View 1 (tube, helix red, strand yellow):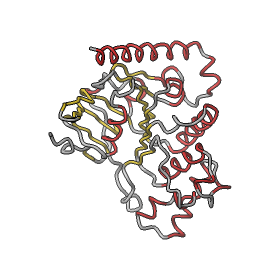
View 2 (view 1 turned 120 degrees about the vertical axis):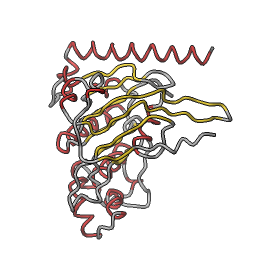
View 3 (view 1 turned 180 degrees about the vertical axis):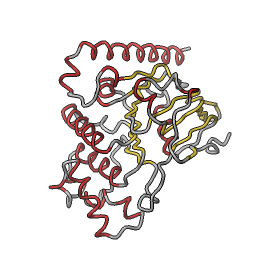
View 4 (view 1 turned 120 degrees about the horizontal axis):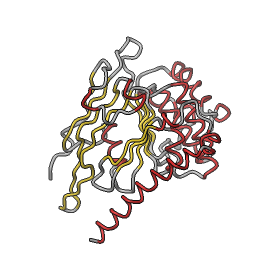
Length: 300
């Protein structure tokens, strides 16, 4: 079995400009911003019961500093695998990823390069909301007083100030995901990686959290790489959307949403625009083609 953990993302500093070699993928305003993440021919192969499986078939794309970049694609196309590679949780089989680190000051020397919010609830049931949010700061050696002071604004950002001393079993599913988001933000990562964080929530809660996530992003301007199955969600929150093909995952399309719907966005106004329906249909038809292609491949 080949060693797929050998090739990991490379951290470089300082942030530099996008190269002309990647201009085809860096459209709209993102082309004018420095590249935070540069992926070149990223491939992933693994073995299932002795049979080789190609998960990613060569991803080449630049993600700009401060960009909200969303990935959509059919089930099994490698979206989560790509996110885990970016997080350093898995290795690539081939290709390269360069992540540009901000110039470190003394205060930010221990600042993490990324934090990940998972699809499943990932907070600890025996810890209060405050202690869950402060977990990363505790691991970095901050005193209890310092970390509690540091996490208070983030607990307020996600609207849980009245539940800071509550335990997870006293929270709804949506509130638990707010805790996970606050914990990621409290660590002040340069990149926020989010793997379908709202997929298990009811529609009303999801819409509310989408709006809150957009508000928080407007305040923090983190570089965000976000995976979702929801076309509607992708349009509402993204600067750009990358549509992936069926396995092995490749880039089928990269759409500059910001050119169609500048920020700040009003969700009602976006949905009332004829351009929203046109964009939704474009993405849906691209995904539909890939779903049928995937089924045909399985049946064949």
